[in-house]
Image (cartoon, rainbow, N blue to C red; front, side, top):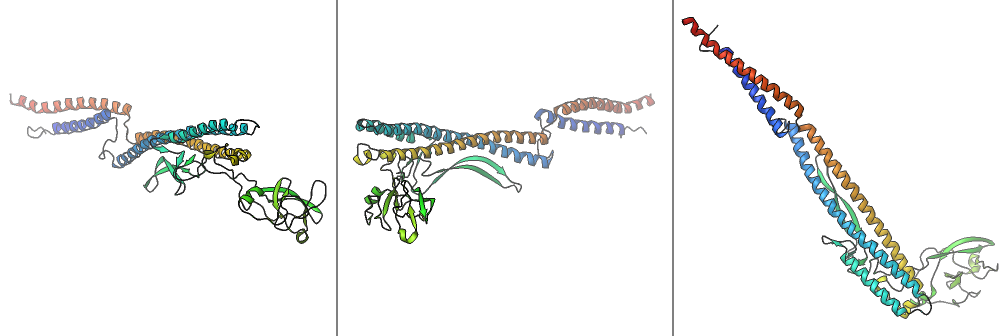
Amino acid sequence: MTSILTNIAAMAALQTLRTIGSNMEETQAHVSSGLRVGQAADNAAYWSIATTMRSDNMALSAVQDALGLGAAKVDTAYSGMESAIEVVKEIKAKLVAATEDGVDKAKIQEEIDQLKDQLTSIAEAASFSGENWLQADLSGGPVTKSVVGSFVRDAGGAVSVKKVDYSLNTNSVLFDTAGNTGILDKVYNVSQASVTLPVNVNGTTSEYTVGAYNVDDLIDASATFDGDYANVGAGALAGDYVKVQGSWVKAVDVAATGQEVVYDDGTTKWGVDTTVTGAPATNVAAPASIATIDITIAAQAGNLDALIAGVDEALTDMTSAAADLGSIAMRIDLQSDFVNKLSDSIDSGVGRLVDADMNEESTRLKALQTQQQLAIQSLSIANSASENVLTLFR
């Protein structure tokens, strides 16, 4: 049926043209933005996931910046520690030189004073962005420094920031600004804690480790002795301190224990307590810390060996602290690389969800353009059908 009031063919062609136009608008939006899911209306689930992950990726970008800042702090501390180690090596060499007879200890002390001032300068200057890891106030105990390591979202959706911690303590800082517990301002105990001796027990000789003592420091500490403690002999009594192979040990009653020390000549002299091991009752400390070394003082000039041993102990702690800083630096570098890769992975994952396939979209747009032209032609034909009715009235 042909009607001049209702053109069904034209209505169908028009509806088709409208649908094609809507599809073209959607495809053009995909092409212009590059996104298949640009808003929640496109795909609510994918849009929500993409928005959340983009937010997390921004947090990871901040973590990356924080890691760079942390790496700078660690590198500064490591450089300072490395320089300080070289200076302490020089101090150790000066002390060794001072053991030579006839040297001018005052001149050597002048050099040591300059080296000590250099250590102070290094510790004060090793600061980045107000953070100094080579000196700290340890009056309240160890101080924990942290570097942001990562941003984490768990399976439940809870987020947290993970950190890399480094402890500033008596074995990692050069100077304690509130006391004398830093590596360079504390006194090291360099006493011999124990000594191994051959002991004859009821005719059987065995090696025993016994507590060792420095009698001079015990005397300085007002320790009292019974008997002739200054000589090796058979007159030692229980509780006395006697010297065996260059070390002072505590004597016991031979008759009560049946234990005797065997000397090089094969004879037995007196007993020694084989039940006490470990640190002696009174610690024998180096007479000065590195910060207070002054070999022009008689007490220190006469104890150069102890000073050298103390400096060597400090070097050991400094080397350990430098190794810890190096480990932290390595971990930060690894974490920085991981965060970069993680950020790229998130970008890639979000892209798979919401990015448009430009090859597909361009092909679709071309097809829609063709459909649009055909729909326009069809609508034109449908509209012209009613005009044909006029020929019936001619």
